[in-house]
Structures are given as C-alpha cells and as structure tokens.
Image 1 (cartoon, rainbow over the protein chains, first blue to last red):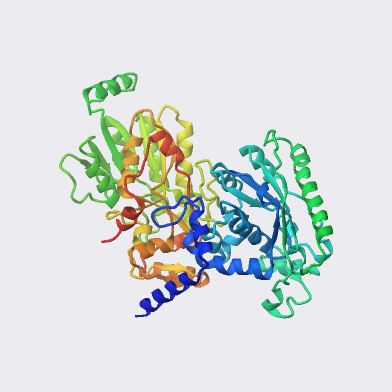
Image 2 (image 1 turned 30 degrees about the vertical axis):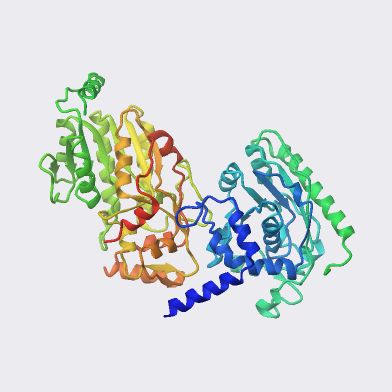
Length: 286
Length: 327
C-alpha cells in the first residue's frame, strides 16, 4: 500500500516538473545503458528530481544572467572559470546555464575534488548528476568523447580565498592546458561575477580544516556562530560571462614554463573579463 | 583441434628439450573449485585437461587427469616433466578464502612461484594467469576507467588485498622475465554467475546485502562464461600480455540490488567495517571484511586492450549478467 502511495506521489511530482525541463533532459546527448545510466554514472532520471530545485535557485535566488553563451563551440570544449564562494555554487550555476540556456542543451561535466568521493551522499550525488572526479585520465576520456568540461585551475586556492582577495585570480594549475593540448580542445574563458561575495570569508582557520580533513575552514560573520545556517550564501546576483574560444597548439609534455606562458594567457583574459564585469555591475545584489 | 594446428605446434616445439607425445594438454591449477570445474566442462572437448589441486575433483569427467597434490610438492613438478603440455591456466585468484582459513597468502603466492618455475624449466609455451581487477583497489582518487598500466597501489591495508597485489606483481615479473613464454595475465572485473562462489556472488546472494549509507559506487561485472571465453581467447597462439576483462557495462550497486529484488541493509560505514570483521571471524558471514571497500569506492577498469588484442566481447548483456546470480 505504501508502495502504491509512493508511486502516486511520484506521478504527482512528475506532473509538477516543468515540461521544459523534461524536454531538455530528453534532448541531452547521452549514451545510456539498459538501466538508464551512462558509463560514468550519470542518470538523467535522477536529475529530473534535482533539477527543478536547482533551476529555481538559478532563476529566483541568484537570478543568473549570462552573456556570450553562444561563444561555446559544439563538440569538445574546456570551460575555464574563476572559482570562489567557499562552496562550489559557481560550478553548479555554470552547469545549469548550459543546460537551461544553450541550444541544444548540454550536460557540462565539472571536475570535482577527489575529496568529494569520500563524503556520504555527495559521493554518488555528483556522479549521478554528471559530475566527475577530476583526474587527468577522466578528463582526457571525456574530451575524447566530445564532452564539455568545466575546470577551475585555481582549485581550492580560489574557492577558499578570503573576502579581501575577491576577484583576484589565484595561481593557475597547468593540468587544464596540458589536457587542451593533448586532446586539441578549444578553451572558453569564463568570468563569474557575484559568487565571490556569496559567503564572505574573513579568515581560513587552517588547523580546524586539517583536523576535519576539509580543504578549508572559513570564518564568516555568520559561520560558525549560527551553525550550518550561517553557511547560507547571500542572495547575490550572478553574472556569467562566456569569452571567445581560445585555441592553443604545442607539446602537452613541454616544460612547465612553456605551459605556464599559455595558461597565463587564459588567466589574463579571465582577469580582464572580471574587471569589465565588475565595472558593468551596479550592485552586488541586483 | 585440426591436424594442421597440431603439426604446427609440434614443429615449433622441435627445438625444445624433449619430444612430447601429447602436445595439446592444458594444465589447470585450482581445478577443483566451482569455476575450475566449470572451465573444465567447457574446455575438455577442445584440449586434454590435466588438473592440479589439493582438493579432490568431484564429478571429474572421464577424460580429465587429476592430480590431487600441492603445487609445492615434487609430484606436481613431475606433471610438467612427464606430460606434454601446451599451457598452464592458473585460477589463482578466482576463488576467495573461506572464513577462518589463514593459508590464503602462502597458498597463492608460493604455489604460483613453484608452478611458474616448472613452466620455465620445462619450456611450457603458454601461461594464463587469472588475476583480478580488484588489484587496482577501490579508492576515492581512482580514475573511472583504469588502464592496465595503472600502479597497483590499492588499499593494501588488509592481508587478502596484499596477497592479491603480491600475486599479480609476481605474475607480471614472470611476464617480463621470460619473453619466450607467452604469458597472459587476465584481470577480470567482479566475476559472477550461477556456478562461482566468490565474494561478489556470496554478497549478492545474501538475504539483506549490507550497503554503506551514503555510498553507491559504480560497478562492473563479468559473467562466468564470459571469463571462460576470455581464457579460451588467451590460449590462442601468439597472444600474450596483461588484459583487463570488462563485462557488458557499468551500473550503480543500488541498481544491481534492485534488479535482484534485494532489500539492502544500509549501515554507516564506521559501523559496517568492525561489524563485518567480527561476523567473518566467527564464521557468521560469507562476506570477507576486506571487500567492504568495494561498497564504498569504485574500482572500474578500461577493457579496450582485451577488446582490441584478444577480440573479447562479452556475450551476456548487463541484465543477463546481473540476473545470473539468481538461484
């Protein structure tokens, strides 16, 4: 009887889901097996229930505005963005923008920290929603499958930085450049404006972070004082700027200095886009 | 076998130390287990089979010669000396230890060292060693599809895992040391089927298989008959190398349990480990505690090499493979 009720409830929920979302899920280019899962653990049925909430946050809470989305070419592509805001909402919003606004809709794979695989729930929530543990081999295989990959070359250096360093790009890792050269993939630079203010970290309390095994332990005006609630991001307005694709050629196994020169070109482009974006912004919240 | 093939292998052997009268025999080490008996049933129509196992061979076909000896005994060496042998198939790691049997490590590694030593000494042209894809070890930092050259770091914090890695490393060193012998190392993903009794099938046959709360790793499985197919392809002349053997696809653990109609028993992983360890020690559980990590982190491999070089394609689809463990 309970099963029957649950089934009824599910049908009800299915009716509530925006038909546009269902239609977009169906239009995704996926390679599913007989159980509706792709080899990487992505399950479109799963996102059917996660997406309406996420889209609600995208549209109503952060009121994401995108510019230049048409710059993203078809086929394999690396989206390279600034990383900020203590929790990777910026990644989620970029992924959503490509799902909601791109035509045809695309499921961007973001490269998540290996650490996430050790967290209960998160460990399977990420793969089921198309996100992948960011190893070089994973990234290469997905690009060879002509997928779109989102990477943050600043890594935790970017997301955990304090409020005082907002919109200052941290040091870039070189892995993304190596992969772009290896797989001949165009790079689209992205600037996310807004996320850097969502959780203003006053300091990163490293001893506690180490103790808990977290990448950082931010102290904000509300966290940890108000408990988990204090970690709620502010309703900042998100602007995502998509730059023109950049093409690089060369030996992926070159000296780090050579790769760094190339990576710096991407970094400077994003820094410039951030500056322009900040200039155009009138207020953090609207 | 056609006469042409026999002639070919006989002439290639003419430079060998002695003349052999029965050039097509295949020695199967570990023949008495469920998988060994199954392999024998499939293989004995094609090759004369000689079995080596400490255990008796129940239901042995008439045309199979079985030596109930320990691989480390002189009698085992005599098999390789007297008989004319085409290949050794070593099922070392298909079977898992029973609760309360500590000799696993000694049995596998030392026994294998001896058997490979005989193969080298008596010029056996082909050696097929069945390892497992578990040697890569489930780990949160794993890539999704690990190729054969991935380091066997594993999580060597429990003895069975260490034995697996040690065994595979020894097999690899043999492969590199004796290029004249066609050595094939197969690393199949979880082998399941109606006959095999190993950790994955024991687990899937539990009334309430335990799962770890908040974890649902992707898994690869291989039907037992598909492993036999891979072994037969490995026996072909000219084939050597290290191959991952991957089944028809990848699915989350929860999907497998659902397909089998099992109601999982979700446990927080901090409780699951010590609990299963205790149950195992008292012989109350058929699930080796070292395997718990497979319920938490993924350990998936890339089967491209076996596809390209062996020409291996699984014959069972995902659903058939999963349902094959149903009694």
